[in-house]
Image 1 (cartoon, rainbow, N blue to C red):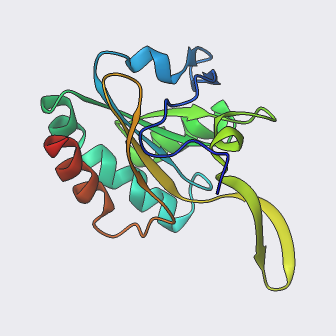
Image 2: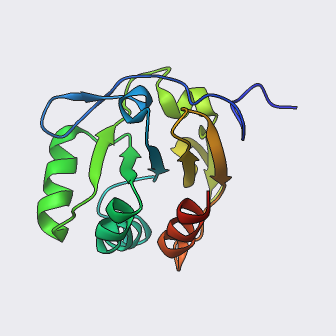
Length: 157
């Protein structure tokens, strides 16, 4: 059994930095639903597709009253470049602090590739209810069709 928050638990309220130098945390969305999608790295193929897919559906999420926030460990400057390069409309946040939100959720973890181990983000999406509790979790997300699936779930919840 994991000690990490799961469906039904409150989303940890940990502050992250926005690309503009401000701050954002889960409590900022209290009173409305929110989707927090965690991805490994700006400007990589899967992460770019995911961010563009969520951006393409942002108007639909807005109509459904659901906030969108993409989160990685990339710096605010990298996020600004990522947003500009791909004309992203979703908000992004930097979760670079040790003990940050991705650590609290257990999705910043040890990974391995080609026999080497490293720390990395597990692509994970959370649907947070208006009460601040986790309504649904998508673990080890496959990007194709994911934004559409999340929108459908957010509309149903």
